[in-house]
Length: 126
Image (tube, rainbow, N blue to C red; front, side, top):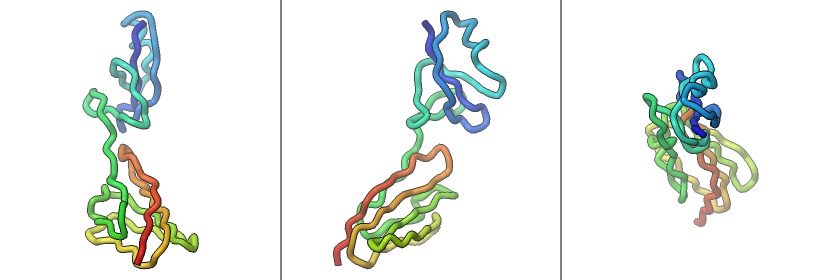
């Protein structure tokens, strides 16, 4: 059996993995607008660049009270839920985010594909 992965030719987003019996069947099972790469890849971990499967880039999670917002990719934002459950969104920019009140904050990133987002809890003590 031949295993292969299909992907969107425009975005590189992995769409499916398939198994066929012959090389000829690979082309028959790759729809228009899609490409294919040999082997099995998961869309949660990989995407395709120039016909090669690559690991999707990750965003460094916030681990303390400050975060350099310029490290976020263009179009990304952080969604911060403070200890009283108030939610704030902060876009990528040349600035630093500083959490000033003590407590547990839920911090999530929302980024354009192909970035892998994070969702974490940051404990701040004063």
